Length: 248
Image 1 (cartoon, rainbow, N blue to C red):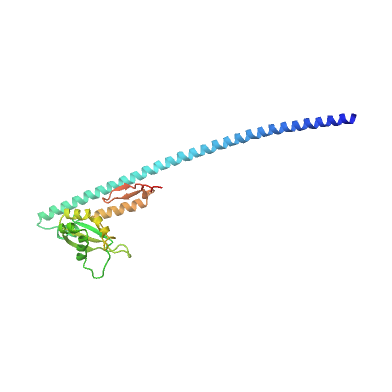
Image 2: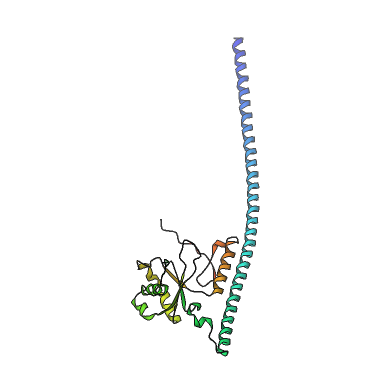
């Protein structure tokens, strides 16, 4: 009987020890969870702080870069306006001086030198020994009878090719500015012509305009985010607009 009582006492001690161990384990678990939560909160706060610092720095850098780009674009635009003004003054002075001296300017002698009377045809294949004036007349004829009847091609010249694998542009002149406008309004009809669906007509520009646009393009290629801008048909720098995404 005494042995049983002794054994029961030992079992109670074991149970007490197990309960104490379990209680200690629970306290340890709670303590560890608190430490983990504290470390997590501290780490999250640190990461958030660093992200906010980086975000503020990035915003500052982008704002500074944007101001610099805006300044460059403004300078280029001002330079373009000044060149156009100088060109207009030069042409006006030449016209006045030529009249006073009884002379005729080169632009009047050669209509191909007058951007108000000329267009550029790109993509017209080169033929050895070609009669470029006859080809220009045939190209304009492809715009339709109505256009062909109201337009007279005065001269045409094949320009040197800028790329070895592409034909040089063809400059075509007309009698009046209105004839040139008529041709440009009908240029899209070439897409429906089998012989000329890869030929494109565009406005001719003066040497000053071409040099100015080439300089502007070179500048855009060498500044950050320059590819976000383009040179339009009138030589102006404009921001590119995102193309609408296709419906899914």
